[in-house]
Image (cartoon, rainbow, N blue to C red; front, top):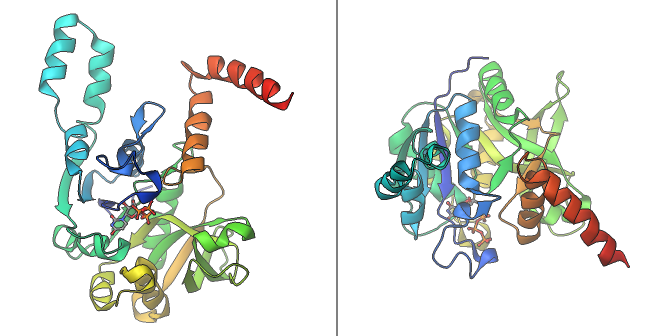
Length: 297
Ligand code: UTP
């Protein structure tokens, strides 16, 4: 379905400290999930939703990321001379995917600060933000639905997922009101990483946002919050209260999401995505059964 948004912003400037030492010289978004960097799945998702213009917000170690979405002339020449068309097409996949642009964050002062760095590129239009370490399964249409809701309500939109209440302290948690659509809620409150047992609901904000440009002046005014970082959540809360700009809506997502920023979830993501692959699935499934049997004995 057509929608008005054309630009995607992908912040990838975090320190990725949960993944050290793997992230000492590599952004965590470049860690492979099966055989593709996590961030490539995210760019593919943006393109599928019709967002061809992709801005990466990069930090230290940005070279690996830039190189991945650029030509790899030497490698292409070697594969061409060997006549290996299949591998050549794997190399070219990420080069031809989208129109990519880059902006530096400098100091990693938080997700809100990373989003603010996109202002000159985005200008006065609404835009989508996709976190580079959150993968949404390609068969589930989350971003498309969020873009529809943005156009219908003329408001900012966040993605929400039900989480185990015991895990709520790891997320931004929303207070919501129902609307007449089953998967759409009005967001009235947001609290970032609530103390265990104090979460107002089990609806967590996950890494997809459709934002109106009015968020930029709000972000500029947002003081550093938790951890000394400029929190996107704080600016979203201001948008939620602002009826003039349409407030804030949430799309409740019930599909498959893989959080590759957390070590255990990263390992699960690799297994889940690999078992569904035609080339790897049968072998991996058979091995997993044997492995689990041996483990339980
Ligand atoms: P996280 O909080 O998960 O990233 O940010 P992190 O700080 O890199 O991770 P740990 O906790 O140290 O392991 C969510 C997303 O926001 C980006 C990250 O790259 C990630 O995609 N981010 C975060 C920025 O781009 N800049 C920042 O200053 C902070």
